Image (cartoon, rainbow, N blue to C red; front, side, top):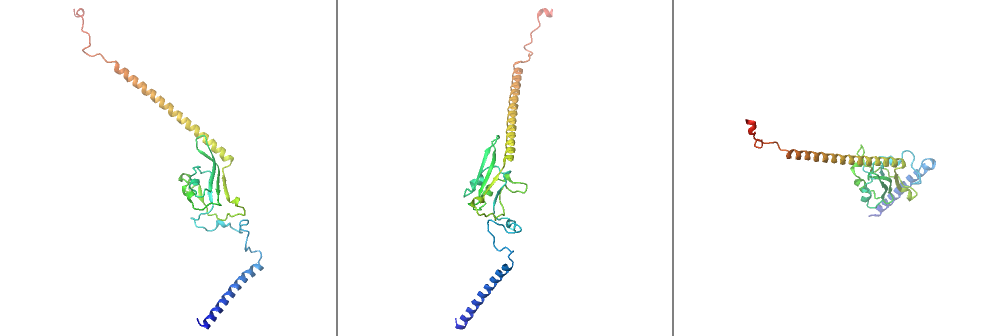
Length: 224
């Protein structure tokens, strides 16, 4: 490279540096005279003004914060078993009809890998009318906070729902017991009818009709 070329290259670099510095100072000067415009915020403590960030145009396949609809959850624990980091846990009780009643569904997002394996393991029978399972990954990503303990999400059923679920479980158990009792009585009645019919058929076979050869011959007195 000649001396002239080196000089031109140096001048070009100085020019680019000056342009960059001027652009930066223009931005600084703009916000200096417009202090009401927000430049930075305390991320995790404040939200940006206007629409929440999680309502932006995000691709439908984005894996964001997990959400569980406790009313449709069947407490199968398949999601917890599929999770590689075991960030999902739940508390439940067994109802009168042996079905599980969910109390609390907890997700620790601090160790979640956003892999989506839990949503894939969620059974299809939890789908709603739109075909969405009870456990889904939403498009919400702005859930950072200053405290690590606040990133754990609890989905609680509540006493009112628990009472309704317990009552429904009790009714199902009673209906199941009544159906079982009715089936047993019907089976017993059918067995009694079958035994009666069998006994009747056996009695009919033992009572044979009188044949022609077995008729008594007329007496001589009757012929005279």
